Length: 340
Image (cartoon, rainbow, N blue to C red; front, side, top):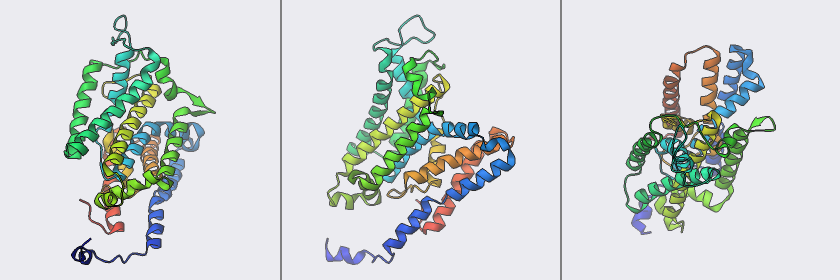
């Protein structure tokens, strides 16, 4: 680094220990909100604190939480992926399309593979979508926002075309097991999501490649100078994001027993709402998976309390938008940084 460059860099004046402490509190900022929502929910309806209701909220959160997990990892690495919304729908459709028999059913597929291969094929489809996004963004240097926006639209069209605009209900039993089974009285999807968040949090905290995501999202050129293979790590994160979105599609399909033609439509707004109010920075390099998870639970509890209070569900979209705008305003003034 030249002396001229060194003189242009302002000296750091923030105490690192104090910064880490503030970051820790920021990750916990939604915990009081969750407690307040719990109190409000109990006042609104005694049914709120029943095990059936709370387990139902947890299961309703599973598919969205996996998309948020994927988006949080991508945002921390300094990128964003809008196509996750379509991947949760198109990956299951592709999988059942190639395994269902070509005749004799309400929905005719290609019958190329046995039914037990539906899950591996679905995950492969999600990974390929992430890989293609990475190819266009990292190798052809195309704008990531536009690429994933185009992928969102294209994949949505592919989902509608393959499903012929109808719900697919004749599914392999292996494909619906994880979304419908219960382990120790709790839906299997809840256990699986908790495990994936724990693994992701540990990876970000202690693994070298996990810590590399913060370095890449904070300053990719500095990360490259430090020896981190920025493009390779980012590509892997995009593939992992597609994989998680496809897995969310498996859980969603098993939960409801069918694949609708518009499965996942409009979810990307909730995904960004949860990640932003959970403290993940849109500028990259900041945030934790615990914060993102509290964002998901906050959104789901708000909807649950509103439902118990008899508020029409038509207000849910308005409230989600209001939450994300308020969270952005709070984040702007607590961080002291502009948001571009």
